[in-house]
Length: 496
Image (cartoon, rainbow, N blue to C red):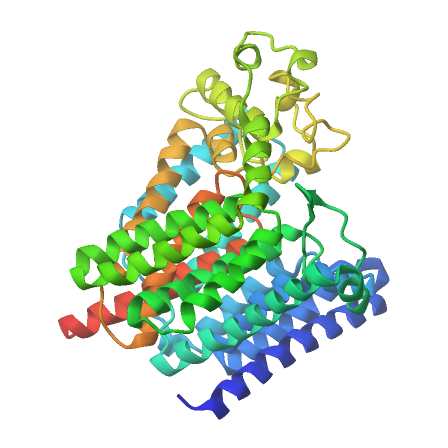
């Protein structure tokens, strides 16, 4: 490992993020009539130029800019809302024109078959239900962005040095953001004031949750969980003595973010990772026993805080039988359903939609998606959900709080089967890849990607994580990078 190259990569990524943000803000102010478009295009051009020069650093610059764009918009009172829509096509163009020698397209298989089934079902539902084009077309773009980024990354080849630099740079940023959050927990007003952010007032139990440099704690909770899984993978691969305590330190950040799902996802990911490694070699048992013992000890120490979260979860997610019966009745009463927890309502409502429209759904942009609240969907009133807190038209903040109900409600049973096949194939490919050999950085990447997949799958139960930026790009990017590396390893082994 060359420290100078790593520092140069870190500086390049940081410089690209700063330049893209500043240039975007300036462009938005110069062109006030179309400020959001101008700001997004200029910022995207900077990121695409970075990618054209150094592809892995360019991808990281895009991911970090997308991660911080909400904070930048708050600081500068700017609007860069189309950053990802503008950047991904430019990255694809630079990929084909400049990096075509790196491209190795994946073979078509079950993954693509599942994607095709979902797309056909979603479009058939859309046209049969006469969804307006101003609803379904933007909705389709929102669904496609993360998948498009996945195929962009999976088609590229990177060498071991690039992977090592990329992981170190990403970890460096994640560690810095984690430390800021930990300091915020001790001195919240000082940190929020230093970064020019509003005071945090969200509570979980007796603790005011931490957001670090973000405006919402969910991003901080996700990032600390995401980074910690690669540290657990590092410890599992070579028992690096520093990796396990550092992973637990990051999970302290996850805990004080007040998010419940990432904590469950971390445990699920570690269980799957242990199962995978124990199938490869029995000598991994001692390593995973150590991981399990440390995690259990940490959970016991955090029990006072976790107990309040468990109580809140049971209160939120146990729906009375009469409410369940009501949502499946021929004419649901919104007054009866208005007290139902919105995520429960979305799950039950999607099942009712799938029953009534079998095997299709209500169409793209009609249920559980961003467009269903931008152009408020009449489907919510049809199923008595238009009076629920977080789903009602006057404040539909919880409409996108799930992923699978959106798939089932908009594309039906057929679409759910297709999407399930797509993600199941990715999961199976990552499971197989985690058993491959190679350099240390490759093995950490492959095992870490499997852990991230499991954590993301758990998160998708209570978040639209596979379509919501910026997390969708990070997880799809990791999946694509891991499968690209695994494919290159397979080609080398077979002499291809």
